[in-house]
Length: 279
Image (tube, rainbow, N blue to C red; front, side, top):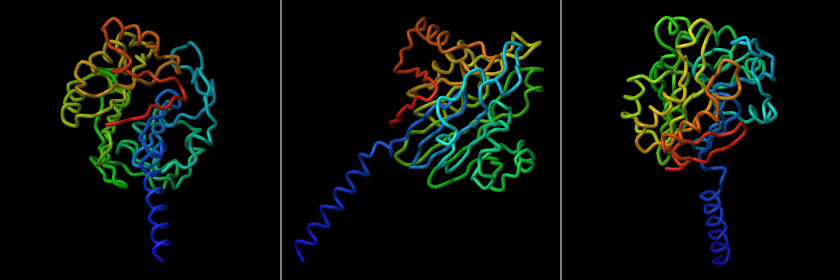
């Protein structure tokens, strides 16, 4: 009997050790393409802003070429299979497209901003939650924050958009800024939540007629985020996938080098790349 108990203890110890060291349990962020992310957090697969269309399936927004300008680096099934939650910052087509609406199960748990409630009702998503402030979901505190998708007249044209903070015990705090320009409100959010990682949409996108007013952060504004980021590492995405984005991975890295910012502070993933997160 003692041998059986001892054997069982050894098995349980080994299982516990494996659970603690299993790399799949480590939080991570994978860039799918543009602003589409797969976040592994508290053992849950969270899909952010799914744009799943093939290359060239969406109209051009700058008169250069149709969008997206690059194909997905992974099969759509690998993106959507096993997803526990979808986060949508707003419903512009580069953040939630027709392909995503067709592909995702209509009963999937989904969190969106209140302004997009009618959209998801029309699309038939029965478990879409229009989040006003914060929500505790499977041990993860999800906080929705307002963002400004441009300035002046451009802001009126672009409409509402949001960001999200993910917080949980013994997990790194993650701030997904979303489509936004640099504002005092974002600076305030960083100071309040003290994130370990900040995901910045750094594509410097412009719209016709307002070429001097970016609708998301560019090189200069990304540097401003870094200057106020404290301990946080910056993960820059939303580049090299849309024809109206002027900031590229290359131009952002060059600007960072000019500002003496290294790869330990500013992470610029390639499509399909996974970044392991740590406290």
